[in-house]
Amino acid sequence: MTLFYVGVALLVILTLLFVLWPLITQSRHREQDVTASDSVRQSTNVALYHDHLADIQASLASGSVTQEQFDALNAELERNLLEDSAVSSGDHESGAVSSVNRRKPVVFFSLLLLIVLVAAALLYGRLGAYSSWQVKQALDERYALEQDFVAADASQQGQLQAKIIIANQRLITRLKADVSNHPDNLQTRALLARTTAGMGDYPTAIEQFKAILELESEGVSSIRAELAQALFLQMNNSVSPEVQSLVDEVLVEDPNNTVGLSLSGIGAFQSEDYATAISFWEKMIAIEGANSPNSIALQQGINTARQRMAAAGQVSDTASTASTLSASQPESVTSGPQIPVMVSLGEGVTAAPEATVFIYARAWQGMKAPLSIARMQVKDLPVTLLLNNSMSMAPSMNLNTAAEFELVARISPSGSPVPQAGDWQVTLGPVTAVTADNVSSAHQLVIGSQLP
Image (cartoon, rainbow, N blue to C red; front, side, top):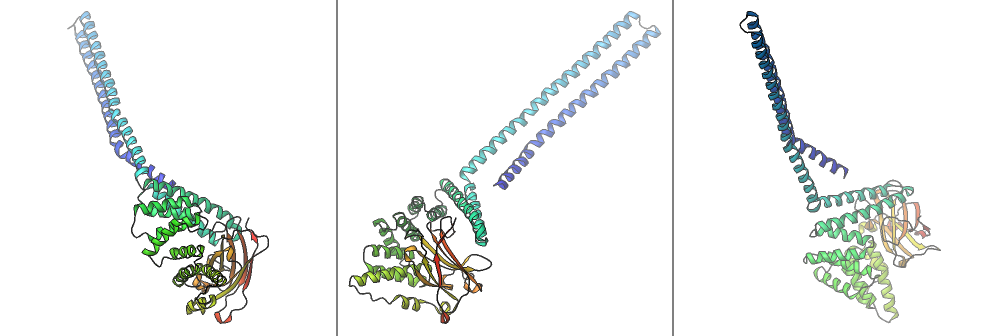
């Protein structure tokens, strides 16, 4: 921002010099010309006075004029010299007045230019892209802090986390300003909605998602799905009629929308239609892969649905959990590095059943970004799972990139992937990965320490 203001100031100075410099130099040259002309006239008058005085003195000496005549002629010469001096002085004063008058356009144009510059700045702030530029600056700031956080050790992460929270708040403030200035910018509205939803401000997120749907009605199934998800979270994980209506519209337009499939399954589960819930969730697992973070959590829901069907005397023709997971695993995953882990809660840990749990492996040395990560809820614990390359966040960042790993299991009440004060966590390391045909007992992770 400082660089922006410095650039504006330099442009203003250059503009002032460009406009005013000719006026200033022209006025100065005119003043110099007037002064030089007055000096020449004064010198000429004095020289003429001395010449005439010498002539009448010579006439007096030769007797051509009397003393009385000489005195009269001398007085006339002195009077003429005084009059010529007065005229010259008057011309100088007139030149001075004229110079002052010539300065008036300089002052006028200076004030006019200042008014134009101020008006331009105000119009730019209102109609220009300044607010969008501020959003970009806030995004760059947050991204840099997140990169620093990933690379930092545990002793520095607390301070960086506080800075990230402040950066997010600043980003939201600037996004709101940009939306106010450019209400038709759907990308800015979507970014504001997703950012506020990620921070738990569901009313603002819902307002922005609905505004997008009012401005654009076609090709926005993903926005409609995100609106349904925000409403679902605002209603304490309850599928209301409004949420169900939105989800139905999403699946008509995009039958493979995973958010729509997940929420439809939850709605069916809450209505005790367990067979339908299993159908929706298994379709989502088939799309995402059985060992993706979401699929692992959904598999827990499928197991629960089957148990309730069995208790009610209903029969599910779906395969067992183990066979479903095994059959859907690609060969590249089952033959690659894997880390078996079992996560459970320690004594004294207080967390809501719906609180998010992140389970991941990261390099023991070097970058601290997760190489394989699973996400579920506290109510799913204890859980045993295999961390492998299907759960990596990017193809170039997986378990193949390190020899030793640190295992982390963390409960995040806010759902943020970035650790925050109050989160419950456990770490273990260094550990090594194994292959599918050499899987031993799982590493035990008992969550019991709270972050300050």
